[in-house]
Length: 159
Image (tube, rainbow, N blue to C red; front, side, top):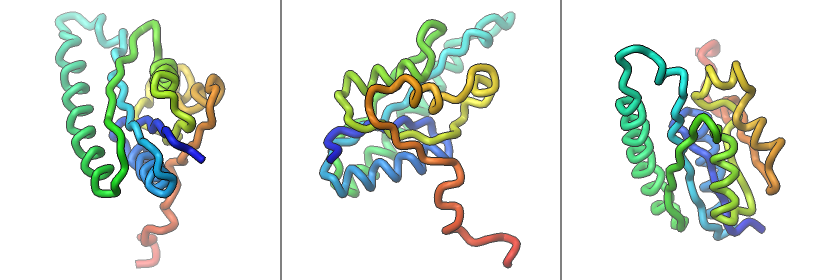
């Protein structure tokens, strides 16, 4: 049913769950998988006196490369084809716009993403990235909630 799946990843626990779901689906469907990591350039940080925005940007790019290596190995282990891509959000294109453009460029027939990533401040100010993607998407979107799979883990209260 799905032949090209894009999964948005940011290194958070929820995005890893989304990646696992997308990987499992790609494996069972024989689909190509493209994990997509977005480097966020938040303008408000750039206004601080003495702040060098390249330090944060370079660290986010490095983090994306590290995550890409990990996800590529997981894909290879499952026999799933595809490659990790990195995009960059700016003051004119927020993360949801960048993710949806990547899905269109990849010609994805499914977008997979977690409901709560690490974008806390932006979520409080603008609403969640996942919510904006669902509202603007022209393709099916599979949302993986932060609580997904927690019932499978041992309950600390019962120990």
